[in-house]
Length: 277
Ligand code: C2E
Ligand code: CA
Ligand code: CA
Ligand code: CA
Image (tube, rainbow, N blue to C red; front, side):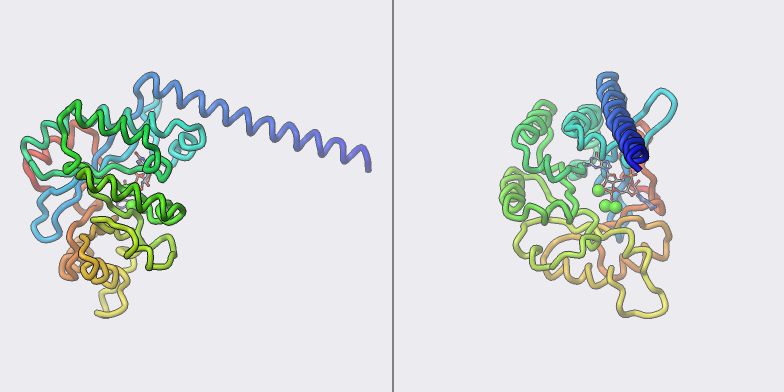
């Protein structure tokens, strides 16, 4: 028995070593990717629900490695763990700025929606870097919306409340992302100041066309109206979803029905047209 225990221990140990090794390797790759400027911003249109005119662009991270394009699920977690998320976000923003300047001259009210982690929203050093970048390109915070997921907001409620207020005083808009997935009490909604609720795709998928009642997406839209904030429905893939949401008074729509996330060059044409359809 002793012998087995020993070999089990050794197995466990080498398994652990391998995991640590793999993590270090993945982090090193990420550092290299950053150094070579491989993080690319993609952009997805967010349109007015009634007119389908372009109102916002959500910036979504991609990692263009030598052999493939990686999506955020393949690296955001590792980047956060390794403390590299600020560098990733700043690299994306840096690449977006020149184009954003041009886009805003065509469309003065256009907003760039930027996904931030909870940690970033509370990191004054990062926020300073972000603001300096905007100043350098003379972009007003009015043209920026910060997206923060519901779950990360409520994990740090008091600090978040303060940070959101400071940012809004500077002119930034705040959107609560993936709303409805956190299964949290709604009382925090009154406690926090924000501008937009992003209704998670799950509620758009669940729209029921037979009955007029019980659609949670519609309940959320009405609740947002009573709070005086706007709504974006995410993951709108079908025209019938778009119609239903627009009829219910949803402010803006986002999803493959209108446009997929696109690289910087492709999105330029859309901004010039000012509409996706
Ligand atoms: P998210 O913020 O909820 O972004 C929306 C995701 O849904 C995007 O996936 C987008 O490509 C996808 N999507 C949009 N429309 C549709 C649709 O009609 N159907 C379907 N099935 N999917 C749709 P993506 O780009 O893979 O990003 C995944 C998540 O990664 C994002 O979810 C966001 O939470 C995170 N993420 C992306 N970029 C960044 C970033 O720069 N910083 C941070 N902190 N998180 C990021
Ligand atoms: Ca988002
Ligand atoms: Ca979302
Ligand atoms: Ca989501």
